[in-house]
Amino acid sequence: MGLKSFVEGGIASVVAGCSTHPLDLIKVRMQLQGEQGLSKPVPQVVHLRAAGLPYHHSHLITFVVNNAQPLSQVKSGPIGVGLKIMQTEGVAALFSGVSATVLRQLLYSTTRLGLYEVFKQKWSDPITGHFPLSQKIAAGLVAGGIGAAVGNPADVAMVRMQADGRLPVSQRRNYKGVMDAITKMSREEGIGSLWRGSSLTVNRAMIVTASQLASYDQFKEAILDNGVMADGLGTHVTASFAAGFVAAVASNPVDVIKTRVMNMRVEPGMKPPYSGAVDCALKTIRSEGVMALYKGFIPTISRQGPFTVVLFVTLEQIRTILKDY
Image (cartoon, rainbow, N blue to C red; front, side):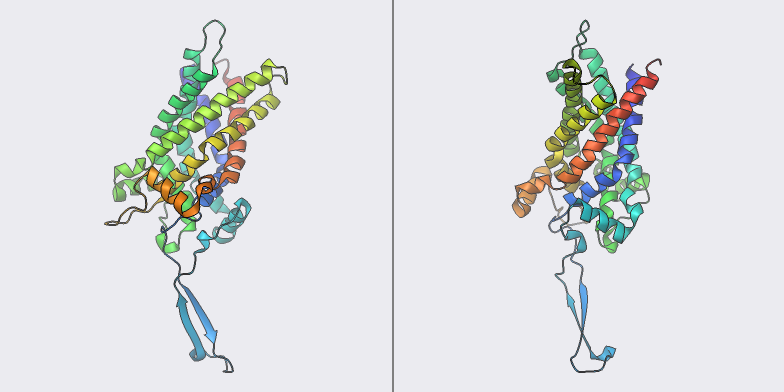
């Protein structure tokens, strides 16, 4: 049962991660909106023709506006961000960093889902099979923390690859894939850069796993115990969407800070934009307000809902297929 739970979780998480990747990318771009001091202003050259003179380049007055706001800093909603990505970077850009998503799911989600099932088997009452909510939460916290520590390098790579298109061309990292990203980060910034923001990743993963897995089991049990629906697709979809909403509300503030810390560019000899998670949180709140911690919430719930539904529906189907193995 132990190994099988990891295989089941890995397959389901990769399917869910790939199918909702564009929504995750939009969420990351929105979370980076309004970030202060992390990209240079883009100069805009403006040409004005002197009035009354015939058109000729010699009669053009040219000046440069240095404080023009980059397009990536113009705040938009999820639909606007999605359309902007497709218009400026192409439809394929919605899947930027998908290789990192696959690796992240294989490392992070496989570990957390597998461990949660192991804990569930060990901690459930041997006679009744009852698994109380407090123990579900504890199992989710531990499993999520361990999974996040394992998957952090892929998480950093994914955030950077998703965010690259918003930067001026001269500042883009242009990673060719997840392995190229990890290799370049290790060589240029040191091995430690692969675990940049790991404390945030672990905290977020603990919150997400505890709220997502525990609430899914709890909602599913409540539906079945009260006879609302039989154990089937309807129950799985209802319980998983409710679990996705709970996870999104609980994790969004940590997710915003995690995204910004992981994406920050540290220039040689220069002071990092953020000294850590607390510094990032304080600077974000001070410059953008408390609600900045819920930036990207609409795409977060738009992604977390479908992701959780696909994850658990796929997981339940895989369990049915592999139940005799």
